[in-house]
Every structure is written in C-alpha cells, then in structure tokens.
Image (cartoon, rainbow, N blue to C red; front, side):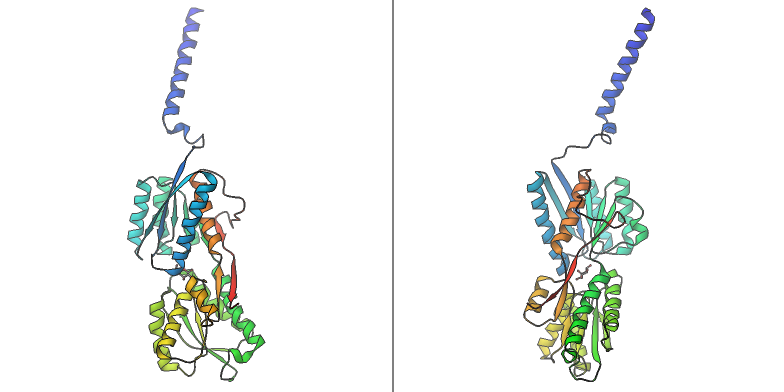
Length: 341
Ligand code: GAL
C-alpha cells in the first residue's frame, strides 16, 4: 500500500512540473490567445513618390489612429519606402521580422517576385497583406496567411471606357471633333509588368468597341504612371500628330495630368482626357474641366480593409465580418465614375 502511494505522489509531482514547464515555454502560446495592448505593423511601399500610393498611405495612417481609439490597442505603423528596388524591400521585410512585427503590409516592387517575401514571412510565421500590386496566383496560394487588397483592373477600365461611350452616345461630336466618323486616340500606359496597365489598356479599348464608338489608335507609349514621363511623350505627340488627336486615354490620373502639362506648355488643341485613380490633383482637373473624367476606388475603404485584416491577424482574431474576401484572401475595393459636378 505504502509503495503504491509513493508512486502516485511522484507521478503527480512530475505532471505538475511538466505543466509549469509548459506554461513557462512557448507551448502555452498556441493554445491561449495573447492579450496584447499594442500591435506592430511593418508596411513597405514600392515607391514613396507615387501619388495614388501616397493617398492610400495617408488613409492607412488615419485608419490606424481610428482603430487605436476604438480598440484601445496601440498600433505601431512602421512605414518604409522601397524606392523601386526589390532588394531594398526584401531587406525591409527582414528588418520588420527582426523587430518583431506581428503582420506585414506589402506593396511589392516586383509583383512577380513576391515569393522571396512569402518565404521569409512563412518561416517567421508572420501573415502578409499585399496591396495594389498583385502577386501571381501561384504565390498567393502558397499559404493561407496571405491576403491581397486592391481595385479590380478590369472594372476600372470598363468604368473609364463607359465615360466615353456615354458621352459619344449622347453627343458624338463631343468626342469626334472633326466629324470624320472616327475618334482618333493616343494611349498612355503604366509599368509594363503591372497587372493594372495590361488589363486597363485592354478593357478600356474593348469597352469603347463594345459600346459602338468608332476608334482609331494614333500612338501609344509607356510612361510608368509618371506625370513627367507622360508630359515629355505628349509633347512629342503634339508636335507629330497635333491636328489628328482627339482623345488621350491614360491608365492613371498622373499621366493624364502630365499630358495636360504638355498641352498647357505648347498651347495645344482642345482634347478629351480620361484617367483612373481620382487622386486629389486628378479630381481638381476634372472639376476645372481639364480632364473629362476619372475612376475612383474608395481609398478610405481600401485602407480600412488593409488595416482591419492586418490588425485581426496581429491579434489572432477573426477578420471583421464586414470584409468580404473572395477565395478567402482577396478584397476588391468598390469603384465609381467621377465627372464634373
Ligand atoms: C495603380 C495606380 C497608379 C499607380 C500604381 C502603382 O493602381 O492607378 O496610379 O499608383 O497603381 O502600383
């Protein structure tokens, strides 16, 4: 009897000791949700001088403040700019991980090279919310802790094309200035590798065709989303095709603004211009009548979605039920046409 009693006692001590050890080491971590009073979010932007991305950044900062007030959880947003260099961005990701970031929000420099970032994040067990520059599907499917927030490129383009189709249907002469039965256009495109450039170009033109607008392309060029590049290209076009051009289709507002800069510099002819983004200078150009119209993605919702997904992941919580995710990982931001009031 005595012998059995001692055995039970020893086993009880061993179990107690193992329990204490388990609590002291990480083994309790996975079972009990951590009570955090602050979260650290590492954000890397592909460039710091992109107008649209800067709009999103400003909204993200606002949303982080609002989240702090609502939840009482401090949000540390560490925002870095990768200056268009993928190696710089990869180093920023490593630094975020070593600083103990709970989640990463990445606007990839090269959307085809997201796998290096995914590797690092997976090894460290840190979820990633990509935005604006969409990694390829194969990469997005590598882990269930990868998310993407963006505006659907085809939708932006169809809306942009609709601005022109609607106008043509109402007043053909408002697009076909010389009344020759054809609208002659030039096209300014964003970066070649960006999903938005390829899809926006294709679907803007397709929408015009489907809408019955007779079009003829005079010239097209890549201006990498940039106002100054677009301005230089437009100046050459004005010199070459000044009398023929009727319409300037731009993959974003900044390039439309660059084309307007060139028109104002050389005192060019009256042209119709359309953009996408509804950045603040883009909206001003629409209101002043310099630009026919643009397409707005709801930037507030865009940033809110990034922040909500990131914060939920950082706190090991469910993602806000108001966020509808396609395939469990894609959030598509609502868009609308903006015309002069
Ligand atoms: C596009 C946007 C451009 C530029 C680009 C950067 O969605 O329309 O203006 O910001 O993203 O990736």
